[in-house]
Image 1: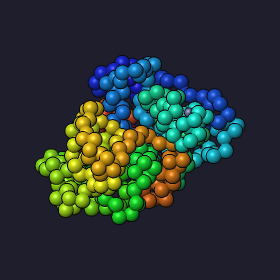
Image 2: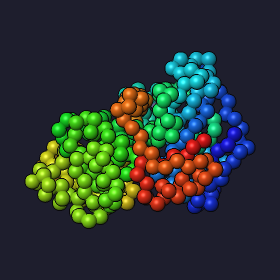
Image 3: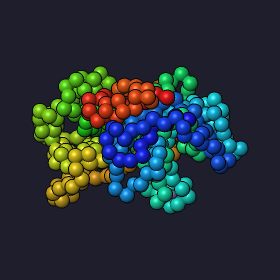
Image 4: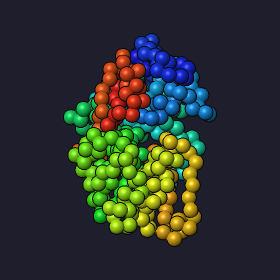
Amino acid sequence: MRALTISAHGGLEQLQLRDDLPTPEIAASSDVRVRMKAAALNRLDLWMLGGLPHIKIAPPWIVGSDGAGVVEAVGDAVTSVKVGDHVVLNPGKSCRQCEYCTSGDSPLCLKYGIMGEHYSGTICEQLVVPEWNVVPIPAHIPMTEAAAFPLASLTAWRMMVSKARVRAGEHVLIWGIGGGVALQALQIAKALGAHTWVTSGSDDKLARAKALGADEVINHAQVDVGKEVRNRTSKRGVDVVIDSVGEKTWGQSLFALGKRGRLVTCGGTSGPMLQMDVRRLFWNQWTIMGSTMGNEEEFAAAAGEFARGQLHAIVDSVHDIAHGADAYARLMSGEQFGKVVVSL
Ligand SMILES: [Zn+2]
Protein backbone atom coordinates (compact mmCIF):
# COMPACT_ATOMS: atom_id res chain seq x y z
CA MET A 1 0.00 0.00 0.00
CA ARG A 2 0.96 3.63 -0.37
CA ALA A 3 1.73 5.84 2.61
CA LEU A 4 3.37 9.15 3.43
CA THR A 5 6.33 8.43 5.69
CA ILE A 6 9.43 9.81 7.37
CA SER A 7 12.56 7.82 8.17
CA ALA A 8 14.52 10.65 9.77
CA HIS A 9 13.71 14.05 11.27
CA GLY A 10 14.29 17.32 9.49
CA GLY A 11 12.49 19.42 6.90
CA LEU A 12 10.13 18.72 4.00
CA GLU A 13 12.86 16.76 2.22
CA GLN A 14 12.37 13.97 4.78
CA LEU A 15 8.80 13.26 3.62
CA GLN A 16 8.73 10.17 1.46
CA LEU A 17 5.83 8.62 -0.43
CA ARG A 18 6.19 4.83 -0.27
CA ASP A 19 4.19 2.34 -2.32
CA ASP A 20 5.72 -0.85 -0.94
CA LEU A 21 4.35 -1.05 2.59
CA PRO A 22 2.50 -4.24 3.65
CA THR A 23 -1.28 -4.20 3.99
CA PRO A 24 -2.00 -4.26 7.75
CA GLU A 25 -3.89 -7.38 8.85
CA ILE A 26 -6.70 -7.70 11.38
CA ALA A 27 -4.94 -9.00 14.49
CA ALA A 28 -7.59 -8.90 17.25
CA SER A 29 -11.28 -9.86 17.07
CA SER A 30 -12.16 -6.24 17.91
CA ASP A 31 -10.10 -4.81 15.02
CA VAL A 32 -11.44 -3.11 11.91
CA ARG A 33 -9.53 -2.32 8.75
CA VAL A 34 -10.31 1.01 7.15
CA ARG A 35 -9.69 1.89 3.52
CA MET A 36 -8.51 5.44 4.07
CA LYS A 37 -9.97 8.09 1.76
CA ALA A 38 -8.53 11.25 3.25
CA ALA A 39 -6.32 12.41 6.10
CA ALA A 40 -5.54 15.81 7.59
CA LEU A 41 -2.55 17.53 9.12
CA ASN A 42 -2.14 19.03 12.57
CA ARG A 43 0.62 21.09 14.14
CA LEU A 44 1.67 17.82 15.77
CA ASP A 45 2.74 16.58 12.33
CA LEU A 46 5.15 19.50 11.96
CA TRP A 47 6.65 18.69 15.37
CA MET A 48 6.94 15.01 14.45
CA LEU A 49 8.70 15.92 11.22
CA GLY A 50 11.16 18.12 13.09
CA GLY A 51 11.55 15.60 15.91
CA LEU A 52 10.14 15.60 19.44
CA PRO A 53 12.21 14.79 22.54
CA HIS A 54 11.26 11.38 24.03
CA ILE A 55 9.50 10.26 20.82
CA LYS A 56 11.34 7.63 18.80
CA ILE A 57 10.02 6.65 15.39
CA ALA A 58 10.42 3.25 13.74
CA PRO A 59 11.17 3.90 10.03
CA PRO A 60 9.40 4.01 7.69
CA TRP A 61 7.10 5.93 10.03
CA ILE A 62 3.64 6.69 8.64
CA VAL A 63 2.66 10.27 9.49
CA GLY A 64 -0.70 11.90 10.23
CA SER A 65 -3.22 11.76 13.12
CA ASP A 66 -6.51 12.61 11.41
CA GLY A 67 -8.39 10.56 8.88
CA ALA A 68 -11.59 9.11 7.49
CA GLY A 69 -12.42 6.17 5.28
CA VAL A 70 -14.58 3.15 4.59
CA VAL A 71 -14.56 -0.05 6.68
CA GLU A 72 -13.29 -2.89 4.46
CA ALA A 73 -12.85 -5.74 6.97
CA VAL A 74 -13.91 -6.44 10.56
CA GLY A 75 -12.86 -8.89 13.28
CA ASP A 76 -15.24 -11.58 14.60
CA ALA A 77 -16.29 -9.60 17.68
CA VAL A 78 -16.93 -6.24 16.02
CA THR A 79 -20.50 -4.99 16.52
CA SER A 80 -20.42 -1.19 16.22
CA VAL A 81 -19.57 -0.96 12.50
CA LYS A 82 -19.80 -3.15 9.42
CA VAL A 83 -18.05 -3.42 6.06
CA GLY A 84 -18.96 -0.46 3.88
CA ASP A 85 -19.58 1.99 6.72
CA HIS A 86 -18.04 5.44 6.38
CA VAL A 87 -16.10 6.29 9.55
CA VAL A 88 -14.01 8.98 11.21
CA LEU A 89 -11.00 7.93 13.30
CA ASN A 90 -10.45 8.86 16.94
CA PRO A 91 -6.67 9.52 16.95
CA GLY A 92 -6.25 8.60 20.64
CA LYS A 93 -5.61 5.09 21.99
CA SER A 94 -5.65 4.12 25.68
CA CYS A 95 -5.76 1.00 27.90
CA ARG A 96 -9.51 1.46 28.67
CA GLN A 97 -9.02 -0.19 32.09
CA CYS A 98 -7.01 2.07 34.40
CA GLU A 99 -8.40 4.58 36.92
CA TYR A 100 -8.17 7.41 34.36
CA CYS A 101 -9.74 5.49 31.48
CA THR A 102 -12.66 4.27 33.58
CA SER A 103 -13.41 7.76 34.94
CA GLY A 104 -13.55 9.59 31.62
CA ASP A 105 -9.97 10.81 31.53
CA SER A 106 -8.41 8.47 28.99
CA PRO A 107 -6.01 11.20 27.75
CA LEU A 108 -4.36 10.84 31.19
CA CYS A 109 -3.92 7.07 30.77
CA LEU A 110 -0.27 6.07 31.19
CA LYS A 111 -0.65 4.12 27.94
CA TYR A 112 -2.38 6.94 26.07
CA GLY A 113 -0.98 7.58 22.63
CA ILE A 114 -1.89 9.38 19.43
CA MET A 115 -1.77 7.96 15.92
CA GLY A 116 1.08 9.57 14.02
CA GLU A 117 2.94 10.30 17.28
CA HIS A 118 3.01 7.13 19.40
CA TYR A 119 1.23 4.84 16.96
CA SER A 120 1.53 4.46 13.21
CA GLY A 121 -0.22 7.34 11.41
CA THR A 122 -3.21 7.87 9.15
CA ILE A 123 -1.78 9.05 5.81
CA CYS A 124 -1.87 5.60 4.27
CA GLU A 125 -4.26 3.57 2.15
CA GLN A 126 -5.20 1.00 4.81
CA LEU A 127 -5.24 1.19 8.59
CA VAL A 128 -6.18 -1.33 11.31
CA VAL A 129 -7.59 0.02 14.60
CA PRO A 130 -9.87 -1.30 17.38
CA GLU A 131 -13.56 -0.71 16.66
CA TRP A 132 -13.78 1.82 19.52
CA ASN A 133 -11.44 4.08 17.55
CA VAL A 134 -13.94 4.58 14.74
CA VAL A 135 -17.34 6.26 14.67
CA PRO A 136 -19.70 5.86 11.69
CA ILE A 137 -20.82 8.96 9.79
CA PRO A 138 -23.40 9.43 7.02
CA ALA A 139 -22.13 8.56 3.53
CA HIS A 140 -23.14 11.96 2.13
CA ILE A 141 -20.43 13.80 4.09
CA PRO A 142 -17.39 14.36 1.85
CA MET A 143 -14.39 12.34 3.02
CA THR A 144 -12.15 15.39 2.79
CA GLU A 145 -14.36 17.16 5.35
CA ALA A 146 -14.64 14.06 7.53
CA ALA A 147 -10.85 13.70 7.66
CA ALA A 148 -10.58 17.30 8.85
CA PHE A 149 -12.93 16.66 11.77
CA PRO A 150 -11.37 14.40 14.47
CA LEU A 151 -8.42 15.84 16.39
CA ALA A 152 -9.37 19.51 16.40
CA SER A 153 -13.03 18.82 17.20
CA LEU A 154 -12.21 16.38 20.00
CA THR A 155 -9.76 18.85 21.55
CA ALA A 156 -12.18 21.78 21.28
CA TRP A 157 -15.12 19.73 22.59
CA ARG A 158 -13.32 18.74 25.78
CA MET A 159 -12.11 22.32 26.33
CA MET A 160 -15.46 23.99 25.71
CA VAL A 161 -18.03 21.46 26.94
CA SER A 162 -16.28 19.31 29.57
CA LYS A 163 -13.72 21.76 31.00
CA ALA A 164 -15.04 25.33 30.63
CA ARG A 165 -18.69 24.17 30.72
CA VAL A 166 -19.72 27.17 28.66
CA ARG A 167 -23.30 28.34 29.25
CA ALA A 168 -25.62 30.37 27.05
CA GLY A 169 -24.95 34.09 27.22
CA GLU A 170 -21.37 33.78 28.44
CA HIS A 171 -18.56 35.58 26.67
CA VAL A 172 -15.86 33.32 25.20
CA LEU A 173 -12.54 34.56 23.79
CA ILE A 174 -10.72 32.32 21.30
CA TRP A 175 -7.19 33.11 20.13
CA GLY A 176 -5.91 32.56 16.61
CA ILE A 177 -8.99 31.90 14.53
CA GLY A 178 -8.08 29.96 11.40
CA GLY A 179 -6.42 27.14 13.33
CA GLY A 180 -8.32 23.88 13.55
CA VAL A 181 -9.01 23.86 17.29
CA ALA A 182 -10.01 27.54 17.30
CA LEU A 183 -12.50 27.06 14.45
CA GLN A 184 -14.11 24.07 16.16
CA ALA A 185 -14.16 25.95 19.49
CA LEU A 186 -15.95 28.86 17.80
CA GLN A 187 -18.66 26.62 16.38
CA ILE A 188 -19.15 24.75 19.66
CA ALA A 189 -19.32 28.01 21.64
CA LYS A 190 -21.94 29.35 19.21
CA ALA A 191 -23.97 26.14 19.49
CA LEU A 192 -23.90 26.52 23.29
CA GLY A 193 -25.32 30.04 22.94
CA ALA A 194 -22.16 31.94 23.89
CA HIS A 195 -21.17 35.44 22.76
CA THR A 196 -17.94 34.75 20.88
CA TRP A 197 -14.77 36.80 20.55
CA VAL A 198 -12.02 35.72 18.15
CA THR A 199 -8.57 37.07 17.36
CA SER A 200 -6.26 36.87 14.37
CA GLY A 201 -3.40 38.84 12.90
CA SER A 202 -5.22 38.73 9.55
CA ASP A 203 -8.26 40.89 8.76
CA ASP A 204 -9.20 38.41 6.05
CA LYS A 205 -9.39 35.57 8.59
CA LEU A 206 -11.41 37.79 10.94
CA ALA A 207 -13.90 38.52 8.16
CA ARG A 208 -14.24 34.81 7.47
CA ALA A 209 -14.74 34.11 11.17
CA LYS A 210 -17.50 36.73 11.22
CA ALA A 211 -19.20 34.88 8.39
CA LEU A 212 -19.04 31.74 10.55
CA GLY A 213 -20.84 33.55 13.37
CA ALA A 214 -18.12 35.19 15.47
CA ASP A 215 -19.72 38.11 17.36
CA GLU A 216 -16.59 40.17 18.08
CA VAL A 217 -13.30 40.17 16.20
CA ILE A 218 -9.94 41.62 17.26
CA ASN A 219 -6.79 41.94 15.16
CA HIS A 220 -4.16 40.88 17.70
CA ALA A 221 -1.36 42.27 15.52
CA GLN A 222 -2.77 45.78 15.93
CA VAL A 223 -4.09 46.05 19.48
CA ASP A 224 -3.58 44.56 22.95
CA VAL A 225 -6.34 41.97 23.16
CA GLY A 226 -6.72 42.21 26.95
CA LYS A 227 -7.18 45.98 26.89
CA GLU A 228 -9.47 45.80 23.87
CA VAL A 229 -11.76 43.27 25.55
CA ARG A 230 -11.94 45.37 28.72
CA ASN A 231 -12.68 48.50 26.71
CA ARG A 232 -15.47 46.88 24.75
CA THR A 233 -17.04 45.24 27.84
CA SER A 234 -16.76 48.28 30.16
CA LYS A 235 -14.08 46.43 32.17
CA ARG A 236 -16.24 43.33 32.76
CA GLY A 237 -14.06 41.00 30.68
CA VAL A 238 -14.98 37.60 29.27
CA ASP A 239 -16.05 34.46 31.11
CA VAL A 240 -13.89 31.97 29.23
CA VAL A 241 -10.58 32.22 27.36
CA ILE A 242 -9.32 29.47 25.05
CA ASP A 243 -5.55 29.92 24.73
CA SER A 244 -3.09 27.60 22.99
CA VAL A 245 -0.41 30.21 22.31
CA GLY A 246 1.17 30.43 25.76
CA GLU A 247 3.92 32.96 26.51
CA LYS A 248 2.94 35.54 23.92
CA THR A 249 -0.75 35.74 24.84
CA TRP A 250 -0.94 34.69 28.51
CA GLY A 251 -0.81 38.19 30.01
CA GLN A 252 -3.44 39.48 27.59
CA SER A 253 -5.62 36.41 28.21
CA LEU A 254 -5.60 37.07 31.95
CA PHE A 255 -6.25 40.78 31.45
CA ALA A 256 -9.30 39.89 29.35
CA LEU A 257 -10.58 37.36 31.89
CA GLY A 258 -13.43 38.65 34.06
CA LYS A 259 -14.49 37.64 37.56
CA ARG A 260 -15.27 33.91 37.92
CA GLY A 261 -13.38 33.49 34.62
CA ARG A 262 -12.09 30.17 33.33
CA LEU A 263 -9.00 29.92 31.17
CA VAL A 264 -8.47 26.65 29.31
CA THR A 265 -5.15 25.99 27.60
CA CYS A 266 -4.22 23.16 25.24
CA GLY A 267 -0.82 24.36 24.12
CA GLY A 268 2.01 26.84 24.19
CA THR A 269 3.05 27.36 20.61
CA SER A 270 4.88 30.64 21.42
CA GLY A 271 6.70 29.30 24.48
CA PRO A 272 5.99 27.34 27.67
CA MET A 273 6.88 29.58 30.64
CA LEU A 274 4.09 31.72 32.11
CA GLN A 275 3.79 34.38 34.79
CA MET A 276 0.85 35.23 36.95
CA ASP A 277 -0.11 37.45 39.90
CA VAL A 278 -1.64 35.10 42.47
CA ARG A 279 -3.63 37.98 44.00
CA ARG A 280 -5.60 38.40 40.81
CA LEU A 281 -6.17 34.62 40.66
CA PHE A 282 -7.84 34.37 44.08
CA TRP A 283 -9.48 37.80 44.12
CA ASN A 284 -11.22 37.17 40.80
CA GLN A 285 -11.81 33.49 41.69
CA TRP A 286 -10.43 32.32 38.40
CA THR A 287 -10.04 28.71 37.32
CA ILE A 288 -7.06 27.81 35.12
CA MET A 289 -7.42 24.50 33.33
CA GLY A 290 -5.24 22.35 31.14
CA SER A 291 -6.82 20.13 28.52
CA THR A 292 -5.63 17.76 25.86
CA MET A 293 -7.45 15.52 23.38
CA GLY A 294 -10.60 13.83 24.80
CA ASN A 295 -12.26 10.52 25.68
CA GLU A 296 -14.40 8.17 23.58
CA GLU A 297 -17.67 9.63 24.86
CA GLU A 298 -16.57 13.14 23.95
CA PHE A 299 -15.48 11.96 20.52
CA ALA A 300 -18.83 10.22 19.98
CA ALA A 301 -20.71 13.35 21.11
CA ALA A 302 -18.76 15.61 18.78
CA ALA A 303 -19.08 13.11 15.92
CA GLY A 304 -22.84 12.99 16.55
CA GLU A 305 -23.10 16.77 16.08
CA PHE A 306 -20.91 16.46 12.98
CA ALA A 307 -23.12 13.70 11.54
CA ARG A 308 -26.24 15.84 12.17
CA GLY A 309 -24.67 18.78 10.39
CA GLN A 310 -24.55 20.90 13.57
CA LEU A 311 -20.75 20.99 13.58
CA HIS A 312 -18.66 21.41 10.46
CA ALA A 313 -15.02 20.80 9.70
CA ILE A 314 -13.51 23.73 7.85
CA VAL A 315 -11.22 22.62 5.01
CA ASP A 316 -8.52 25.03 3.88
CA SER A 317 -7.12 22.98 1.01
CA VAL A 318 -6.88 19.43 -0.32
CA HIS A 319 -3.58 17.98 -1.57
CA ASP A 320 -3.05 14.59 -3.24
CA ILE A 321 -0.86 12.19 -1.25
CA ALA A 322 1.70 12.45 -4.08
CA HIS A 323 2.13 16.11 -3.06
CA GLY A 324 2.31 15.58 0.69
CA ALA A 325 5.13 18.11 1.05
CA ASP A 326 2.83 20.80 -0.40
CA ALA A 327 0.33 20.06 2.37
CA TYR A 328 3.03 20.41 5.03
CA ALA A 329 4.28 23.63 3.43
CA ARG A 330 0.76 25.07 3.52
CA LEU A 331 0.46 24.33 7.25
CA MET A 332 3.93 25.79 7.88
CA SER A 333 2.92 29.02 6.10
CA GLY A 334 0.37 29.86 8.78
CA GLU A 335 -1.86 31.26 6.04
CA GLN A 336 -4.42 28.46 6.19
CA PHE A 337 -7.99 28.94 7.38
CA GLY A 338 -9.13 25.51 8.47
CA LYS A 339 -7.60 22.10 7.96
CA VAL A 340 -5.01 21.09 5.41
CA VAL A 341 -6.26 17.78 3.97
CA VAL A 342 -4.41 15.01 2.15
CA SER A 343 -6.53 12.99 -0.26
CA LEU A 344 -5.89 9.29 -0.78
ZN1 LIG B 1 -5.84 3.67 30.83
